Image 1 (tube, rainbow, N blue to C red):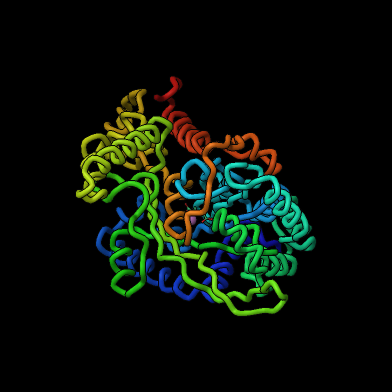
Image 2 (image 1 turned 90 degrees about the vertical axis):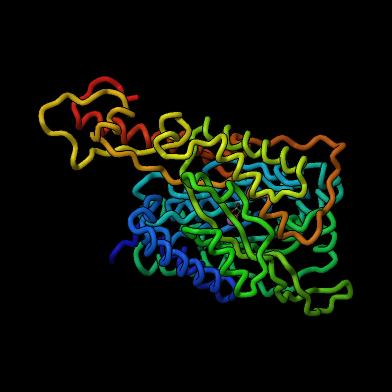
Length: 465
Ligand code: OOG
Ligand code: NI
C-alpha cells in the first residue's frame, strides 16, 4: 500500500482543519476568500516581486493555528500529534509578561524547521500551556481544583497517539491509517457539544478568560486559523467594508515603504458562539461564549538577534512617543520612527547584519576566469551570487499578547504583589518532552549552509563573511 509521507499528512491536516473551522466559524471562510482576492490582486500588480517571500502556492495554502492546553502531559501529547506531521517546537513565548491583562500561559510554536519542508507546506500551530502554579493568577485552592479537573480529562484518544507515534517512526503512514489518523486528529480540535459547567467556567473567567477557555471545559479546540495575506492594510479595509468588525489595530511593524520585516497581524473580533451550559441545579440551558476569532497575517524577513533587538528598541521608542503625543495616531508615529532608524532596503539590512538571507549562485555570474571576491557583500555587488530574504516563520510575544487581549471579554485579575513562577525554554523543553528549538539558530543555519554551498561552488576556501 502506498505511504503518505509526513509533509503530505501535514498539508492534508491543514486543509481538513480549515474545512472544519470554516464550518464552525463561517466568518473564517470570508476571511480566507478576501485574503485570496487580495493576494491575486497583489500578484497582478507586483508580478514576481510579490513572491519574493514565498511562492504564491505556498502563501495561498499557508495557515497557522492556535491551540491551548492545560498540563505538561497534554502538551507532550500535542507534540506527538504534531511530530507525526514533521512539526517541532520552536521558540519560547512568555505571554504572562507580554500582556497587561491576565493571560496565564507560556507558549511555543510547532512548525517544520528545514527550508525544503517549509516550502512544501509551512503549517504551524501556536500552542499555549496554562500556568496554574503562578500565584499571581491562581490561589492554592483554585490551583488544586484546576489541576484535579485537568488531570481527569483526556484530550487525545490513545488510538490517535499510537498512530502519531507510528507516523513519526516510519516517516509516514499507509493510506488507510493516514485517513484514520487525520480523522481523529481533526476531531480532537473540534468544538465539543458537551455542556459547559457554568459555575466552574465563571469561576475561572473571573481570573482570566483564557484560563476559562482552557481549564473550564473537558476538551480542547482550535482557537483560530490564520491565513497569510500579501497586503494586510488592504485586507483590513476590505473586511471593514464588508461590515466585519476588526480589532482596532494591526499588530507589529507599521506599514512603510521599506522592506517587510517579521510579522504583522490583525483579526476580526471574537464572535459569540452558542454553547450548551450546565447550570448549578443540573439543568442544561443554551448560552454563548465569545472566545474564537479570525486572525490574518502578513509575513516579512526574519531578523537576526541584532535586528530583533533594534525592533524591540523601536517599539519602545514608539511607546514613549505615543504616550507623549496622545493625539497623534500610533501608526504615524511608528512609521516616522521606522523611517528614521530602520534601513530602507534589503541590501542595507544585510550589510548591517540585521536580517537573514540565503545566497545562491547567480545564473549570469562572470565566467571570464576572474577570481571572485571573498566577502558576501562584494559577491552580491559584483553579481556572483544573489541574496534572497529568509521569511520569518515565528511569532512575536507582544503581538500575540495584543491579539489575545483585544479579543478577551474581561481583563481578569492578577496580583502583581506576588512573585510569578519562572519558566523558560529549558523548562518548556522538559514539559514538551523534546527540545524547544531556538529560532535564531535555525535561521542562521539556513543562511550559513547556503553561503558555504555558494563558496564551495565558486572554489573559495576562505570563509565567506
Ligand atoms: C494565541 C495568540 C497568539 C499569534 O498569532 O500571535 C497567536 C491564542 O490566542 O491562543 O496566535
Ligand atoms: Ni495566531
